[in-house]
Length: 250
Image (tube, rainbow, N blue to C red; front, side, top):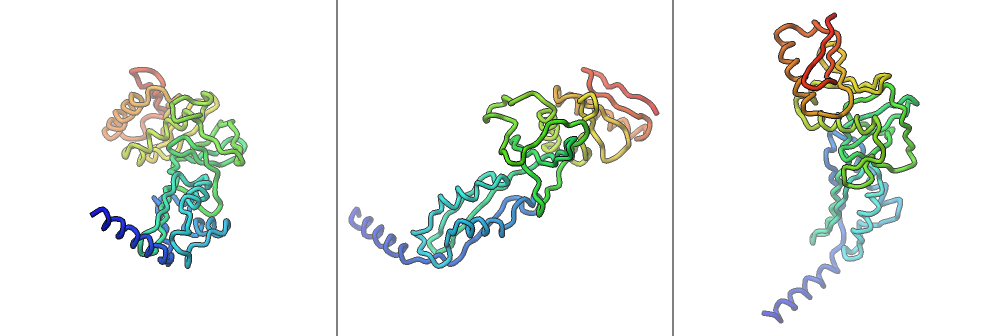
């Protein structure tokens, strides 16, 4: 059995050396929702670094190098490249999932993804996400790759409005109900977050990103009440204070 095993192994290795790469299959996660990357972008990376694939013996193709080069794109989270025995090179790309598009006071636009990574705007592609604007003074340098976390731990580089926007937008993006109800975050001149709803014209003062669960629980209770009394009774809804909601009538 041992001899048979090594004979078969040698036969497979010898045949593998003769297999030529005949096709490159590229798949991109969430391609319909987040259009940061297209398959043509991946091919451009391979061409740029002169990584010849089609027509090459599969044993000569460096899949690890292909992964490393594709991962240099800031829109890419992870890449997996592997070859099948029938000569197909498969490249599976997971692109980053933005949860917020930010416009600061300098009119710089950028995305914030679910891991806290700041991403530049791409002219050819866009992603439909929650929007944040207003008194956001924090600049964004598109030439520097930056995450609001210095590591995987929940320790932020600096406590600022970007961190608050990240926490609120992540909560909304993970909740089906609020994802359908809230369309924008606005930072007022007191550096407090206001929620802009899809329905109604109320100003919802959220404050900072503390006590998220309780604040959204209180707001949902108000939404139930609005179904009974109507949506235009109040001008402002203030969620900042613990265990209460302060509303101002029109």
